Length: 450
Image (tube, rainbow, N blue to C red):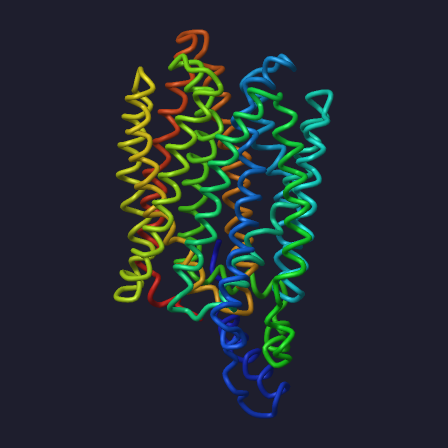
């Protein structure tokens, strides 16, 4: 994204000065929304946001563990499974990401979050009633259309609930919810699919999400309701201007590029890991969902919490660590993933995969605090949404599709081993991801805007 002209920077300053004068005639007192709540209230809010994160991740990843039963029932190829697991989700995600972000930046973020949660839960529920592969694809389109309403308002609320020095840890807690959702999706979802059928995995998940949406609506509070001044300052930027402003921040562009390449690898590989374990390592669906599922979810959980702790401490000393940590993690992770995918037995694969996931999640978590450090409050949800838009379109849209297509292309030569080689090729994309994060760190200091 090319930086806009110098006039844009001047316009930014003009907008800020005009906004302040319009609001109070002079500089208003600094608004610190985290002071509105007690520590108990913050903990209550964070618990609900954690559960929302669990729900969103479960509803996405439960599909991966039931791909094999879906393949057998509907008689489809790996490329079609990759399309179902990626592009169906990503297309609608791309269409609704910016509208949800603008609503989050200028409206009631609690309403945005609960509306989206109820929506994707309903579509997950309908996935369980699909009678054809096309109907299942349409339901996944609906899940994709609602998912952009999760992370932008969630992370924006955390930035208002917690002061800057505590945000990394609070973000780590909600992202740890993603790890738990992954665990539940793979282990519980796989167990339900193996015992009650794959449709019930979707149905039970959808019902739980709808119940959680009702709870979230009752518990969460919107800090903007207490500050008319903060609201007026925020609404002065147009969408075009906000996007142009973010485009001038090279550290932000680098972080988005790094996250996109990372998710291209991560979502492409993770979608097919259950199939890899079942086909290549000759493990049953139930055993795969329990052994590998527990291992990878535990590594993700530990990695996220360790990443939050590490980012908070290193970032407070040198802000560029927010970008350096992901760069280092991608390089080490690429090596460990390649070794894991070379395994011929489950008990060789599990510890190597555990180590790879632990390293990657510990390091790459810091990319999110780096975005919050440079985006600026008026465009916080938009910045997160653009990052998600990019990595979902590249990662979810192209990652699983590319992995599946590579497997199909190699199948004539390598038969079942084609999936192994396909996933190993995907690990190579972690190297340019590391380079993008490194460049982001190079520009991070000069782009800081709270």
